[in-house]
Length: 374
Ligand SMILES: Cc1ncc(COP(=O)(O)O)c(C=O)c1O
Image 1: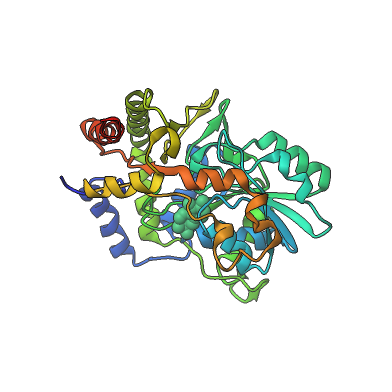
Image 2: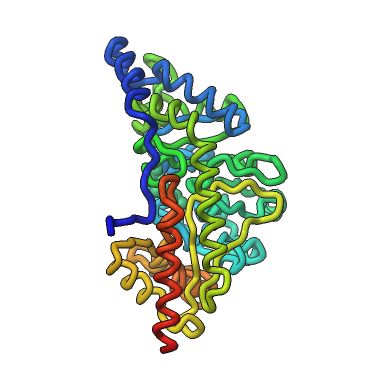
């Protein structure tokens, strides 16, 4: 069996990309707010239903810049259950992460635990819409309003997700996206910050371009995080196909759910009411007592069939040596995150994954249980 990885990037027809490449070669405009960069910003605002977007070379630099744009300092409340770049963005800004436990139902930061973590040094909350499932944005907004905190969402798993037809990107002061190759929508590497007013967009645009406000004025120690024309051209093409990709992912998720629904000891998330999901991941939880195999055993066994799931997110960010000395990183502070991190396995999901392969993966999972019984 050919290897099947947790994801496989969607690529548009090469001939269509050639047209863009020819044009870029002729224009010799490769980066620095070129034609395709400008077109993509406009098209993205329309597609996503947001007012302003600044494109970036990747999501990590977008996160680092988002914190700078709002001049966030001191302590920031965040989740340990994410990709490590979420917390690294704080580290790069000399900000102390304060980890708060997650909700068992959705794996996002638990809003009911946020207030207890606020100190006089807290300036912001950095939640993550994990696997694209929206955080409890209303509750987080209420807390932020009460304590005068800023909210920056890590929306790197979230593409086109809407709650009751409202784009989830419109919540919080800023939302940060990733268009990395492994994401639902990719520009090879890429990212963006969504904001709600022109002045903030200008500040972000300055920061991603060394701090230049014009040819001779540097207003901040900015970085180089500009998206180039090849990435932007890819982004324009991908927009044509992303609805189809998400529809295919939705079918795969439905197939997994149907196949796994009676499997004792293996749980998965259902769609949330009123939410248009993007199906960026298909996480399952392996309950070692009921499934009679540990998550790691399942992960290793699947590899023997050339199926490569991923343990997103294990270990917890708070377990890495850089962060584990923080008081909020203590495991007794994060029991739900620890449990989910020990049980979670993301199964392969990508638009070109055939239904028969999904069934094969599920048959293997079912077989483990049968063989254990025998
Ligand atoms: C939750 C989360 N935050 C941040 C990032 C960083 O994005 P990038 O890889 O585009 O730098 C990623 C993914 O890679 C992610 O999954």
